[in-house]
Every structure is written in C-alpha cells, then in structure tokens.
Length: 240
Image (cartoon, rainbow, N blue to C red):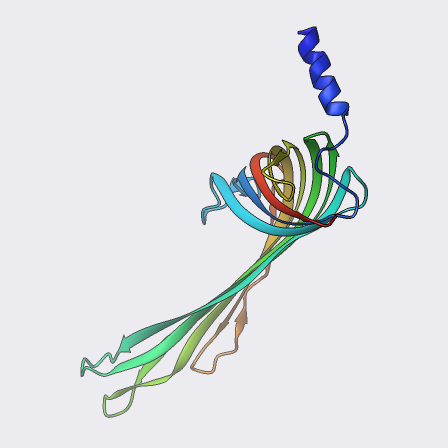
C-alpha cells in the first residue's frame, strides 16, 4: 500500500503532460446529471425527473502551463406554428382555420477554471442559464345572428410565458487522456449545486370586448440540492 501511495504521489506531483501556456482549446462538454428540479420543495409537475443530458461547446486558453480558463456557451430558439380548425356550430360544414404559436429559447453561459497536475485535473465552473417558453393560444368565438347563422366574431386569446433562470456551481475531478498531441479526452465526475426560480405570467383577452385579464405573476424557487454528474470533454488544443 505504501508503494502504491508513493507512486500516486509522484504521478500527481509530476509536470503536466498536456497543458502548455498559450494554447487555445476548442471543445465539447457532455454532462449526465441526476437533477430533478424541485419547486417549493415539491417535484415540478411537468416532468423534470431523473437524469438530464446536455452538450455544451466551449473555448479555453492556457494562461500558464497548468491553468486553463474558458467559457462554455450554448443558445437556441424555436418556434412552432400549430394550425387548427373550428367547426361552425350550425353543422353546415363550414370551418374556421386559426393558429396557435409556441416559442422557446435558451441561453447558457459557463465560465470555468481548470487546474492540471500531470494527467489529473480539477475544474470549477459557474453556469448562468435562462430558459423561456411562450404559448399564444387562440380560441374562435362563434356568435349567432338574428337569422340563426353563425359567424366568428373574433378570438379569445390566452398568452402564457414561463421563464426559468438558474445558477449552477460545479466542481469536477477528472483525468486527461491523450489520443494525440492535439486531441484530448477528459472523463470526470462532479458535484453541483443548482438554485434559481421559475416565473410564470399569463394574460387573457376576449373577443367580446371585455377588458383583458392579467393573472398574478407567480414565482417559484428551485431547490438548491446537491447533484452528482458524470462528464466527458473532448478538446482540440491549438498552438505551438
């Protein structure tokens, strides 16, 4: 056991095999985290259960032979247009076509600091995350005229917006595997703390001219429980 401990100590104190001052890192981080979100200490009913998986591009720079600083960034936008048909209540076969729209977007910024000793490394990261979902739902309102014919007088609309903002602090310990002098694989395990909030806003408008109804804004905190993760980073190191 003493020989094994001595060997480990020698390896851990030896110079870094891969890290060199002035090199630029282009890479991709993969995370598998067991983190069911919790709101007001109850599981979120819409399904953030079990492990989550994510990929995050990153760029880094070695400020010394053993220290890398960098930034992970990921963003996206999506819009889905749903088309529906509402039938005339008179049953004459007439239909009214209308659309509902769903929008979503996310922004993730993750500055990090990584320290190497031989093939081993320790990484600290702060992730600032923002996720937004918007739903514009419309419902045709049919109204009968004096002669009994129905027509659409307008749309009742229900607009909902949900914004989730979180901060995640992570600490990882891993080992760097060199495929060649430029391509590096870095498996690691980590522990994270996640905290933040979810804000919901809703507004209803009516085709018959009633005043719009703005529902009270609700804010639900996300618990800051500890979560564990398994990670794999693939990096391309550029420079002399």
